[in-house]
Amino acid sequence: MLNKQKITILLATYNGEEFLDEQLNSLNNQNIDNINILVSDDGSTDNTLIILDKWRAKWIKGSFTILVGPQKGFCENFRFLINSLDADDTFVAFCDQDDVWRANKLNNALKRLASIGVNAQAMYCSRSRLIDAEGREIGFSPIFSKKPTFGNALVQSLAGGNTIVLNFAAFKLLRESAKRTTFFSHDWWCYQIIMGAGGHVIYDSVPQIDYRQHGNNIFGRNKGVQAKWRRIVALFSGDYSEWIDVNLYALEKCQDLLLENNVDLINKFKIARKGNVVKRLLFLFKNDIKRQTYIPNIGLYVSALMGKL
Image 1: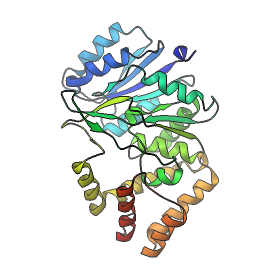
Image 2: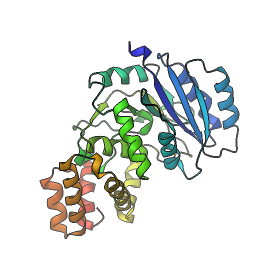
Image 3: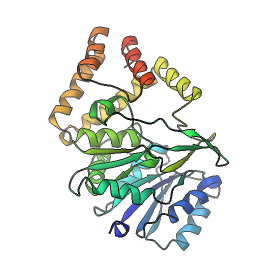
């Protein structure tokens, strides 16, 4: 039965000729029969469009549609894809142009989402295996063991967008929010809006994709010395605080979509961020606001101490 479910893959491309063919081949190898591909190309000047046209001509699992993207960066490209899909009877997965999906990725996601039920908003995401430009394993994304919560979503994204699969109800919620507002990143926003509305987030600790690390990544690996240094720089430069600003502005535009207690938490967060150091720290402690792992959680409290929350 799961094999007959319709799923739409939202694929954002931009000058992705080097790895795109391998990614599309991994989508074709998914053990799901009914897969529609919706691509937004953000102004590629290489052979990306030629590769896409080749796959469109031979795609037999469903539709294969190529759109001209907004050319405002990767986040707006995904937002454009979200708003371009008007179907309400399809699961939705996000896809980058340079990864490799395991053959059972979508089937595994649909099985996990089926356990939630069709009416509840639900999002599936997973850990990733990290590979280099040549496809060699170089590690894994961090494993997150804490239960997904809205408090966690306020201060941290849970998993890469390239691992996310949404059920019908969750995608309708996401699309409604995307009509109203921009956001910092589609993966973090999915986590925030779904948890904020009282939905369910399933985190799979078993990697389902090979997440390629190379020089053109917008956000590379989330592990290792370079990743830790990047987070420290974001903290001290104020970038992290600016990301929180963007997210809170977006949540404000969607308050009527959220549970009342989560709107209350947002308002308390806004007040605490403008308060003194004691108020900032007490807010985190009293409301059990945590990041998923130990060192980043220390960083969260340091950001509160520094007024960079």
